[in-house]
Figure (spheres, rainbow, N blue to C red):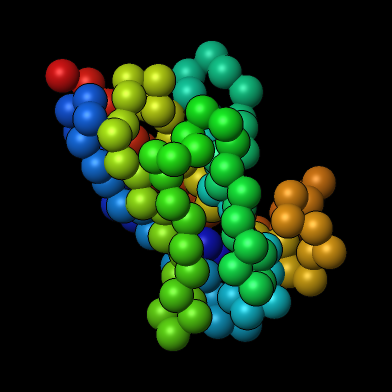
Amino acid sequence: QLVESGGGLVQPGGSLRLSCAVPASIFTISVINWHRQAPGKKRELVAAISRGGTTYYTESVEGRFTISRDNAKNTVFLQMNNLRAEDTAMYYCAAAPNSPTLIPKDYDYWGRGTQVTVSS
């Protein structure tokens, strides 16, 4: 299973860094992506990173969020800067082993999520 951490309450304009711990057995072979779901809204893809480090961001976070992976720690990070109220959501990471695409249709592994709340 994947384990997220790093969420919390932050003021608008602030920063948080989310972490996703991934089992070593699947880390190097997986596309690992961050999703979020706000109350009453559909889950959306936020950022994606391939096995080789290619990245993707949804338009609303482009330039503010950075996804990265630390192969030594089997961990994927989501650095979130200049946070806005509309970034408030439960954030989930998901892994797709051996996926041929950066944004797979399905994921084999999900974490339980970490809550991010942006409020003054």
